[in-house]
Length: 125
Image: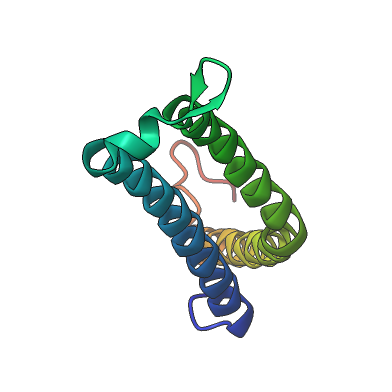
């Protein structure tokens, strides 16, 4: 299964998505932390009334988390799940066929190794 081109494609798609999402999240998070540490005047700047830039960016951290989760789910449903289901079904069919073959071989060995039990008692003439 690991040699199947579709499986490699599935891994490539997942890896690309995971790297993009993790990089986006961590980049945005570390930008927020860096601004909080080194740009205090900018973060303290009032944006709307008593709400400053730091509070707005903090709220955007939550929003971006949900957006990234939504984006992952949408991409996975479109690009990963159908291919994964196809590969899973084929793997289950192969396993069922292998189990059936093993069952037939075990039955064949049982029949070949069968020996009648010795008869005890009177012999007929």
